[in-house]
Image (cartoon, rainbow, N blue to C red; front, side, top):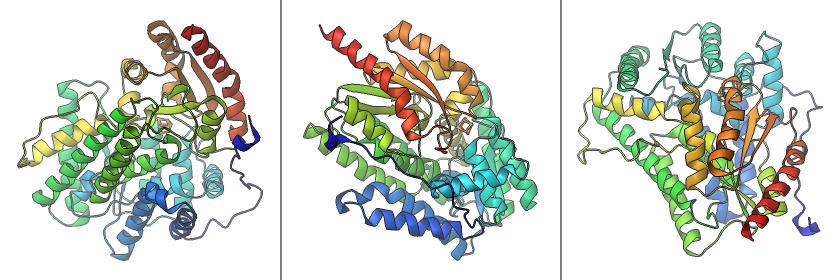
Length: 446
Ligand code: SF4
């Protein structure tokens, strides 16, 4: 690689013993805002969802609102619809500095958290054990995508002495399955009314669901832009922001405004034929998860091989294949109808869609993304605790090769914790694979 293209991976210091009994929310807020201010002003908007999510948590505390936890597959539009701000307790583990995340995760192990629990959630439990979270008045979890969520919910419920509401996820995608979730969401509204002491205002609920619909629609169009060659969206830096905006804040006006800006930016770049910083030679799909601790991994792929990461299946909120559902323009939906709309979306969130039932969904989605977005190679970055999807990795690899002739790299990592598979080790796995893919593409061009 030419010297000018040498990529610097993030350096972490795991040797220092951190004080975990700090106000991690405001500490993270200060760090995030400081880092954003050092960026070029023209791209600072990219990171706005981090600021919005952290400020929302602070606001919920300052305003002495009821604190309502939701796990990442319970779309927060339900909580916005009750006229309150959701408290993104898992998001704090996702956003806080990696050294803190690792220390919180380790702390949870000293309190009998098993190592096979998803590390995002052991990190969250560590923050709770350090008094870094506000005590909840209510907690809503869904049993998808995996058992880690329910186990975490039970642990938090016992720790805080709070009765949770758990949405039981169906295995399949039948009408009965959707109706089953719809009924539970309606029961959850009653649960929230009881816990926060106020009745649902239908106009507020309609507005939150409508904004969430709009956010999903915008993201659908953004993903359509990614079909262009070169891909006009520099995914590596914007990716985590999309997760924060959708998992944490869908149903808010902030997320709609941010996605509108994002789509405008993508359109403008596409019209000018702009891709990333490096010429696009290969198009990559990350099927399921991807390393979140160092964007330099994606930059390295682009610099070394012109390999653009186009698809991140574990984070693509596309509302697919039910997009684009018909809506009445006046949006005068009853509570039952709104709950059905929310159930449909909840069952199609990333991970919830691919990990809750038969692996047909996961495999079909893999083929869909790779075919429609003209992908050259797939990467299954197997999160070490993701027991369910590991079982289908080899199957996905074989189907991709058989149906589309696309090779797949499978490797093991912890997507949040670089101590398991560092950025350097990750690219060492990728280098021979991407060399082979580049040669294959060259060979096929002749
Ligand atoms: S990343 Fe895997 S282990 Fe973690 S919550 Fe998602 S499905 Fe579960």
